[in-house]
Image (tube, rainbow, N blue to C red; front, side, top):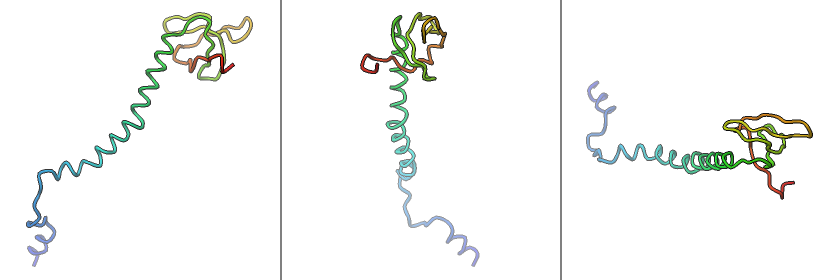
Length: 108
């Protein structure tokens, strides 16, 4: 009686184990990764590349917005820092990474 019960709990010996059954089990995980890649990872990498290019092209006189929301004009660009003029006789030193965007004439 117990052997029949143990046999009933095991895999069905008549059901054939296909070669691709392991791949089919991972298919939902692979599909989720592909969706995450195209919807989250790839756009984030594109934005990071555009931001890096924008920072490399900063020059004196550019009107910028910092990540903190301050508006200013670039006075000096160094390797890792930028000096912004935010008002008359007021200059502030920022890390380059904290420059969020360069303002265009249409945004004025």
